[in-house]
Image (cartoon, rainbow, N blue to C red; front, side):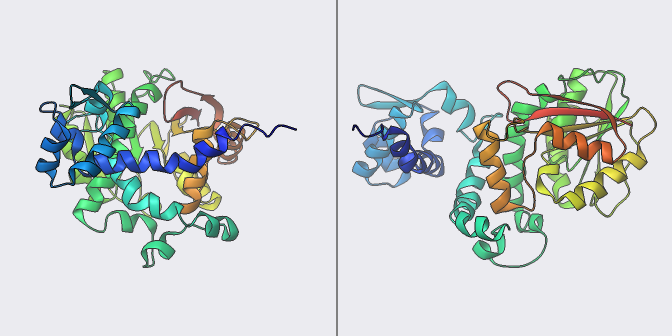
Length: 337
């Protein structure tokens, strides 16, 4: 009897090596240097103080991963790398890559313990006690890395989320935990009559204001500091929650939705941006892996649309609609009071 094809297993055995190759190339600023001009391995090794032979191995791997090209001994960025892997690009994903390398990489190493105990691994890996997000904002560098990492994903998903439903009837959007304001920015660009507020922890808002100013929308988007579990919300007829509900337990979600429902006027809406599990529970892979990520990092998980529908209707909302968005890290849900 012939053996099954081992290729899927072999791919999974070495998949982390692909990630670490890209993470290392980003950390060494290889793509930043090559953005100026193509370079040979020895030239680049001199610039970054690396071993030429070792660097050549990494560069050749990046060529095969379709991150670089090699022509006559000179390496150059492909458009994909110039867009997402350089620090000067407005669409850079480096913030999330650095967060993945410096935090998630170590937390995922403790996945067996997380599965056994059903709890996140933050204290086990990094020590300390207290609320998770205080760790992300421990230093200015940590805060900016995490917030801009979320911003990079938001720039991919938010324009699609705000166009998933017709939001033209709403007048004022409040984005709870809105970080850099990428969703209100996308919404105000899509709906000229809309104004918005970003509600987030005060420590975040200096970065938020920088991004809003850069989008030339400071006349339509303001910032409000606060803790959405403890502090009152600004008045609005539309609240947004982007990658928020998947962080928390059901009890905390119920508390948050109750506050939103009580603040909204009749006919007001709630827009939720999360990646939805298929009703079967076994796809898509991105969402399944993200749910494991929530296990090692937070108190939460990813959910099916039917689960969000039950949660929202329990809080009093009606007309719950969900749309799976193609080529987007997030999907969209809209419900009304």
